[in-house]
Figure 1 (cartoon, rainbow over the protein chains, first blue to last red):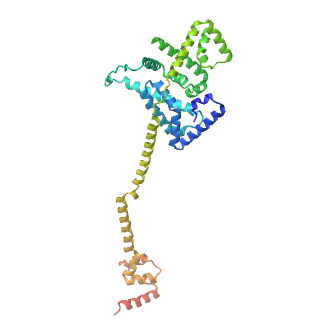
Figure 2 (figure 1 turned 90 degrees about the vertical axis):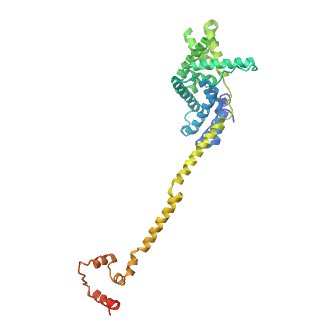
Figure 3 (figure 1 turned 180 degrees about the vertical axis):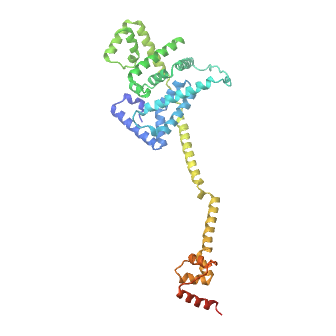
Length: 201
Length: 170
């Protein structure tokens, strides 16, 4: 099956076919067909995982949240009435869950807890190629910079840069006007630029 | 277009979400404005960096979700069967007790049935057969010893005498 994310680059006819296939899948899910849910998961797991990774900044949490998102989708799929694109509905669920998780953690962090020193510091394996180390470092810096942004800015940046959502789709997910999307995205990019500049990047 | 207005449009320029006219204006501006050109290239670079963070999801996400979905369904099934078992008819002790109580009721009804009374005493049987009175009616009057028992129906009186002679006479 053609990935829905790629649907923007293929003809309208093929897009309609993909839409119809997706609609069938969703209707099967709504009827309780777990097999259809499996196909939905495989279709969207990369997108949801990347949103979660971008929002939370670490792979383990991203994986947990991705699973939780799909579980929630399975529970709530009956509420999806085909009034919007499934992808935008899914992205809204995913970003909201990530923000909830982030808020929950922040609340936990404000309460006095002991430092976690159960895991000893491990030096980076000397056999790892230098380029890879550099890449991992760069990714960590970028994740740290994203974490410093407001939730709204981080959300719009991830949806735009990682998921390649159009301004129309962004407006749908964020539930605002295209004009607002335009200005908020620009503010978000300037904000990230400022943070990265502070990190001498 | 002025510098400040151009700067605000740089993001939309990167995303190709501008009108032809706006796009042209920006192209012209960045040729002459070093600051805008620098911001534009940095924003482009940062966008690419975030795009490069994209990864493939780790394997096994569906398997975990599926296990939870199935176990969720199993819990539902379990609760449903528990609900069925909770109905008394499917539990052995109440079922046996219920059967015993039911049997006692039925046997008791048969044993203490009012029809038995008609045959206990010949006179009851006689009265029951020969009167329009139900047993209860007649019996109530009959057994009240304080009230003198008067028989107004002569035919009934005669018959009673004949019957009593036949059964209890010397």
